[in-house]
Image (cartoon, rainbow, N blue to C red; front, side):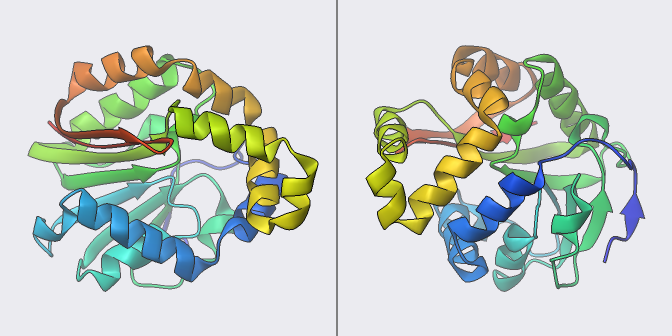
Length: 224
């Protein structure tokens, strides 16, 4: 159930991407993955009543992961009504654009985003708009948690495997990933070739507390 609408009719991920995303891993697999990441990035130490916003929340599995960890004040934001409608839980859902966040200044303790920023069509402009909104919305000392693809040697190997037809025939996960990459290839490869620009942009607004670049992922926690 969508509780609030900030924007309607804006372009979002196409249905080809969404269908491949649904095939890539089951909800339970994704929830377990999110819990592992949250634990690695220190989320269990956050106060359970903290106001947490998950951007690009999709079908809401990161929200479910946070619920299972005991967090109670949760909000999800995404541009896809189709994905938002798949969520079942107590979190507040907003149909909105991360480049135009409308939270009250200083009202949020933590923002999380996992695999959404690389969908932004214009770099660094769109990323700066998103980070400005997050910075404005966070309380003093608030934090931003980020997990995004990153151009490590491991990711180059994954891309090579995805291009092999036999690999796609033998693995539904590889086939789904290949379809997702093709559906978002313009923004995806723009992101992967803008790593220095991206880090400068984030560090312009936030101080890094944790930064991990490993196995094709950038995982970090950044303080206002």
